Length: 79
Image (cartoon, rainbow, N blue to C red; front, side, top):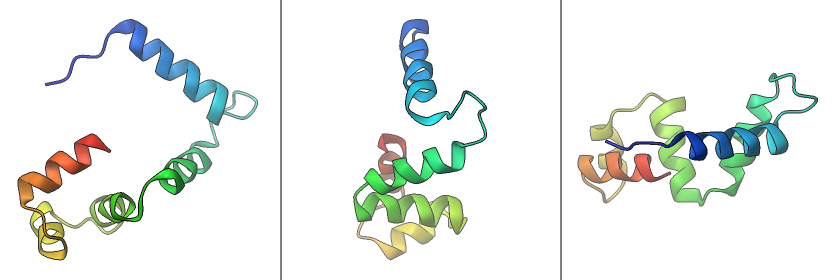
């Protein structure tokens, strides 16, 4: 289990607000997510798409890659 300190959470919130929220309205999160996805390698982006866009299970993703189910879980956590 990962514990996040209050200061680390505040830093993340500050970066989110500064880099991704236009005029502070909070409605540009899709654009922000697209920017994040664009920065990923193709293999990491595929993992995200398969899991969250296509709703594939870790078992199904493992069959598409050369990773184990635990490897998929770890890779997704690290992204």
